[in-house]
Amino acid sequence: MSPVEGDVASGTAPLAIHAEGLGRDYGTTRALDALDLQVPAGSLIGLVGPNGAGKTTAMLLLATLLGPSRGRAWVFGQDVTRERVAVRRRLGLVFQEPSVDGLLSVEENLLFAGRLAGLGGSAVRAAVGRTMARTGLGARAGEPTRQLSGGWRRLADIARATLHRPDLLILDEPTVGLDPEHRDRMWGLLDAERRERGATILFSTHYLSEADPADRVVMLARGAVVADAPPAALRAGVGEQVAEIDGPGADTLVAELRAAGLVVMAHRAERGWRVGLSGARERVTELAGAATGIARLALRPPTLEDVYFARTQAPVAT
Amino acid sequence: MSALATVRGIVVRDLIRTTRQKSRLVAGLARPFIWVFLVGAGFNAIARLEGGLSYQAFAYPGGIVMAALFGGMLTAISTVYDREFGMLRLMLASPSGVGAVLAGRTLSATIIGGVQGGIVLACASLAVRLTLPQYAAAAAALVLASLTSATLGLLVAARLTSVENFGGVINIVLFPLLFVSGALYPTAGMPGPLRTLARVNPVTYMVDLIRHTFGQPAEFALALDVGALVIAAVAAFGLTAVLFDPEQRFVGRKPAADSRQPMANG
Image 1: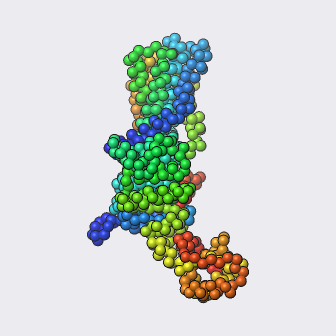
Image 2 (image 1 turned 180 degrees about the horizontal axis):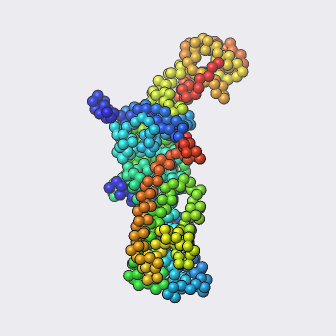
Image 3 (image 1 turned 180 degrees about the vertical axis):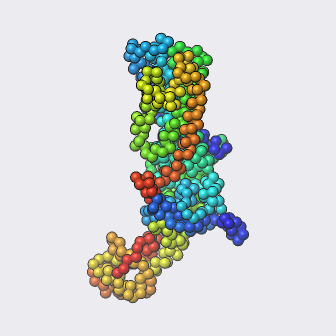
């Protein structure tokens, strides 16, 4: 039974993405083990994880550009291996590197993309005009894209991916190399896609603060899902506060915090310990105050970066 | 309709790209003229050809094919650039599928090869006398030659993984196809093994077909030339469809057969 049949039977909204044990091997390398994912239509989902975790592979599988080695997946109820054409009609894709032709102008690139999406005649010209007005690219319509800055080239890429008003946008690290102004502009465009058309967005990023506004964050590590929850729930899972501890006495202090039952997670990195804590703040400061050899101690609210280290890195014993 | 829009998109893009790569255009057109008028001027004095033809008149059909072959094949082989620089994945994500992508690239390469060969044909009066019907017949033959060149280029691109191999392709594919074809000298004078190669070389039939339309002595019957080119074009396109790996852009190839790795970070 496909997810659509199930959804209709239960009276719930159709899922934009439904993956069951979806995996892909490259020879003997298991790039993606078994992805289980359910994404309601209209959601904003962040996919995060270390390099090589399987994010790009998962996205390519959902985008019908790779065939799975195991498992199945549906996009709006359509099978990504058996109904590729139907799936592609509803997809907008942004890859890690901008997919725009440097020899073509912005407008020519958009016309090319529109025709690839199956738009012909006046429909493609109308879509390009609408998209350029919406994205602010109209003033640069005639410029060869190779003359644009990286930020404008990426915006042209986003314009290309949204030109045909796809129901599902899959974006693989869309903000890599962008300055804050262009990142903000890009997210503004994507927000409008959700707000005005109810588009579903699945994006990957290494900038974890970008995943904060997501409805859910899915963390991948070594080809498997290690966390899947709203950002607030994920942050709560690493403790009420996080201590950053560095110095020769850091190991001892972490051990004492552990012995006191205050540690939810502990991760040792190059720049010292990152320790998720729960319990009375006074007890923490008391232990820290008595410790020696501490060069740096900072207490702060947990972030998704803390969750990332807690969930994607191997645990460290003190 | 969706597939037609995709084909049109690919053709329009390729034509725009070609007009903006002026040095490539000039080089593609200069090559046959250099051969016919510079090299050919010297060969005129020493070549003794059937029917009292001057070498330049003899080489002119070969010059037309040279322009069409390089224009058509190199445009088709540019698929490798698209694969390496990310445009091919965009095309492969189209709802129209791989067939429309291959058809679009074949059509654009045919047009570009045909136009380049057509410019050389339009200048034919510099070396040969042709009637209007002969020009028309040669133009029709040129379309078939360009189509076959395009499909051969696509076949080369089907399994070519890197643009680093591009120069090598010109040296080990295009030049041998041209040299062992009767374009620049009669196949009758070739050593036995080369003559055998010439008989299985589609370019031989392109040149021979143009010779028919020019009213020059030809090696094969007109129907054989047309048949051979149609078969070559259909076979090359069919083989490309089989060999073309849509996943190749996303999966790097390493020496061991089973060590394919994802190219992107995640």
